[in-house]
Length: 569
Image (cartoon, rainbow, N blue to C red; front, side, top):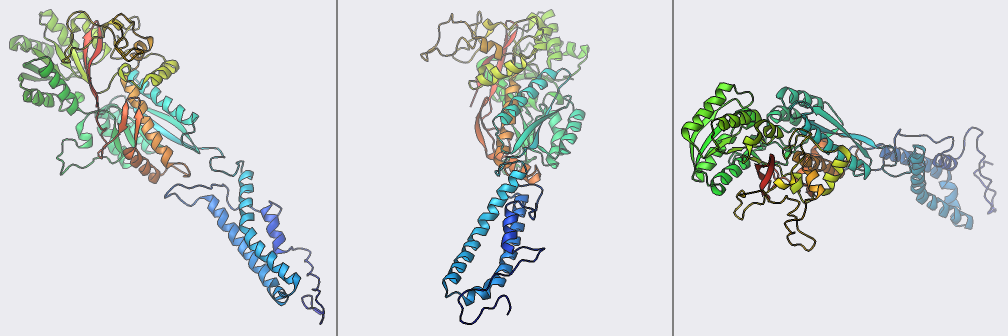
């Protein structure tokens, strides 16, 4: 009589077959495997139980698939071994109980497999949930001048991005990921920008780059970064061609699909200067000095066009080397000013040429005001030109931090961590000179510069506790004074970093790596995102330009560049 036969007339089943010495039943083997016993094994080296949209198959699913296949095989073998025996006895009480047990087993296998996966995750050092193991590392790049004349600005930009990175790590803003900062010195030169771009393009863990600051550097760096698929958010590039702004609406195409900028462009800066010169200052005879490509290829041309459209006459236009104009060239322009007798001089040169010209004019007792751009907006201009600079003007596209209502916490954190930055545009470069808070004027009702002694500072003009204007004698706050010791671009760099980090927080959780698909999704998220930044609402149009950018007009008063008019959206 074989073991699976029974005696005629008996309801008792035959004893279950004995297990061979070197084997066990499939059910026992399944139990051992699920409980992590000797016969269990790891199917993958890493457990991941979450995946982003469009992400690759992750090891956790491989474990599940392999486990299900093994369980299915064991179940089939057990079913074949017992199907005949159970079928013959389904009419008995014991047979019905066995059928119920088999059904319960079929339900329990997936549950047991899930428990096994959780135990396997714990064996990996996690707790069975995404992000429980050590986080993956992503990198955020900064491209800025970290040395040379603009080193103080570039370092402030890097430090501001550091604050954004540290905040993202402290708050676990990107679950499962740790952010590292990597900074490259572009030297504010095309060769430095090219080298930095090549290094960033080779970094497979990079989610994006904050910078560069200079449009000249951007023209070299962006083709390399764009070809590598790296998202870029610049705090300050102002050249219109980087987003094809001058093209007609019907033919305009975006040159770099993953490039964004937080500042306005030369088109806005030229119009701001022209409107202020003609409509506010009522200047009608303007002499223009074009500093060349390093200071905006078309800035002087745009100003000439806008000022003429406003009704002014451009009496002459000089093309000079804005970086290193020889003394004879400076003298030639000074002689022309004396001959033509303009009532305003518009210059797109840097502080070296502007200060040299200002001193020549002072020596000749010519007091015509200079209206410069952000290239002249430097404490070095104040130190070089001295008292002769009083009353000169400059335009910029970055609102000073002391005038950004939402920047208080950022400014306090920056100063607590890094301290004041010497050489910012609103205070003298030399450390022994302190900001003179009494120099900030109140603009007239028509936006014109005030006459007579400067009025109270911006801090003194903040609303009082009841929302009304404070008394004129109210002293300025220390916070406003110290905020002026931080370059405005630091706040714009902070928001640039936040734009990339916020996008990464949407895209990266559950992904295994920063690949081109992830970077493409991050760039798309930056483009569609919108958030309240320290520089105002941050959002971009279809070409990567910031919606509703700001512009500022400064005047030199009491030896400082003081913001007179802020054109905010």
